[in-house]
Length: 454
Ligand SMILES: N#Cc1c(NC(=O)c2cc(S(=O)(=O)N3CCOCC3)c(Cl)cc2Cl)sc2c1CCN(Cc1ccc(O)cc1)C2
Image: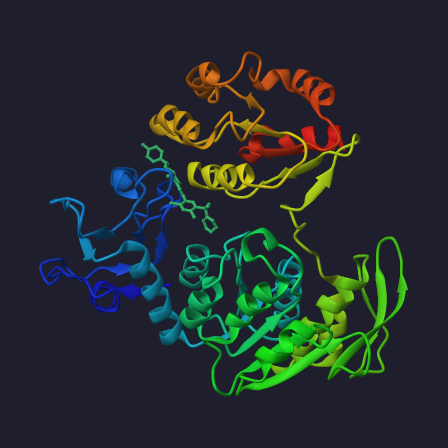
């Protein structure tokens, strides 16, 4: 990214006069002060802590400018753009950058299929165009603007995953990104506890068309009756996909093997393959191919790319333990905000068994580490969570802080060297109906704990 101070100030509607600053250029935008590089714009978001507290760290790492809330005392020795609301300014800046660079924007949503379809689409488009895609789970109102502002200057095709937790989420993301192509991979059941009915989920998913360009294309499943009524209000072109010729384009699965799936699309004689099992991956490949064909990628390139696609393992899926407990190892974003958010949503999840959490150290939090690990106590309530297993030396302060608030023995702490002891205790404690959440920095190796419990 490359933006001048002046155009940035204008785009975010800065409230202060920036003419007193020399005209600098920003080459990136970051809200995690640890990731700030030279030339970045710092985005002080309210996470587990208020990002405004971390300007010094951002400055040390090379930030040249910062957005700044009008409600926070202004630093007098650092250039800032004072705004009504930092998050909105971040989003508006992303929208400005998108309108300036004008890549083709492809938006993809749907329950679990969206990540696979996003990866497949980007992989196929990359055979022919300079392509950029959503990284990790950066698919929400913070992650998507971040993705847009991280896009290389010469990006031709931008593949954005759009996540939906609540009604209104996709309306915001779609109107920000104004996609040229929008795809709903599946309506599914996720978040039923929030939406109440699958109709409400379908309505929420259809919001992805709210920002769709007039000459854009909406790609939807042909076998989803709940979408029918909403599609009547769509003025843009619609293409449906499915398993048979009731859809505009369909896929015929010829063979499902352990390591690959063999199939054929309605629009080509070619016998295709992807190096992953599961007929739903053939459906995801069909959506990716419909998008690629629409944008001019040849069938040869599509076939070659699909045969070689590597998928980022969908890393937030639930896996079952050997006794039947459900385990979620959320390996994304080991930062205080993400840990707090996942603890809050885990604490609300329906279960007939007990909720248990394994929390490992969050690394690289420097001198803020103690207070940030302790702050997780705000997300741990003995009413919702039966047992807390803390793992690593940074987590000792959290143990000391919460042990008194839980029944005797409900909070335990292990040093990193005692991973085996942690595994033995979990094997002993876990019951069939339990839910287990595991979250830590990758460096703590919690995936070994999950593997041992499977
Ligand atoms: N609160 C907080 C902190 C962070 N939070 C985030 O990065 C963050 C992550 C998330 S997220 O949940 O990970 N996320 C981001 C993108 O889309 C998917 C979801 C969100 Cl939504 C919001 C924020 Cl503000 S990163 C970070 C802190 C506080 C400490 N910082 C480093 C530091 C160490 C020592 C110091 O002296 C100063 C700073 C690093």
